[in-house]
Length: 362
Image 1 (cartoon, rainbow, N blue to C red):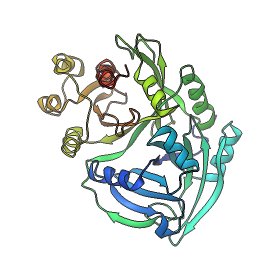
Image 2: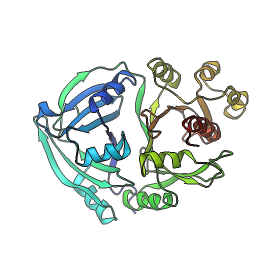
Image 3: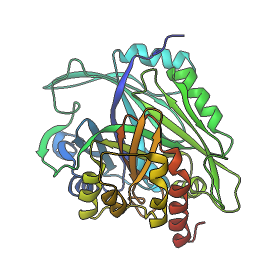
């Protein structure tokens, strides 16, 4: 088997279908520091769709909504609320990638097409994955514009928060479906099982889940996939599935070189994070060992820490960024560590359960 059969290069962008793209773009620019780099809508010749392209470091988001009350975007927003529709890949050859994906069992979402404007052209296609989520394939070697064809360049600078790139994207699927989708990523995209966590690893007194991290051969693209497991009460995955009304992207992890700076900035701008109890810090450094950062600052900011054989990481998770308890974000700083904070799972899930209890959903 070819180690990268679809010639995937990286995550090109993550597109969210939202109820109001203008307000969503304002939030991500003002609260999270993204730059606005492009706009697509009435003024650019589109009568039923409006999109704002945002960028910080190499992380690119698109906020998309519709002027209409019917159609795919409207139905997606009605059913799921604000959520991720597309995790798009940049590839060497869209036609080859699409054909190979279909040959390997993928279902088409968009056959290959050419999109052009004054900056050049791209090839674009897409396949379906879990729930209503898709993966686009994009080849922009012949395109010189700031984002993609159809987008009018609009440069409104955000304040920045030290975000570098998308580290990983986590999906939640129904009970009993995790292995199915892991097999799908292995068969269709050529991914491998990078790390597996069972329900003994990720559990609290009340709930548990199982997770497998799927990754490309270079560990550049990483997709953890979660499913709920048996527990005394409703797990965070079940809560997500209930309110998202099906499988979908649970959270997007954004890498930073200084998570203390990033979290401080985002807190100042109103981003809400999960609350970590002070007792967490009574023994954590025995496990993590020495770090370069100020441990008192880490404690004051409520940041989680973990270590594997390659180094340590620091991470923190936001509360859901919309009223439905669905999509949230993770900010992660890796100092060699290739893991996902397994040592923090219990503290993290207890923090999430406290929020669930406040919502009456535990």
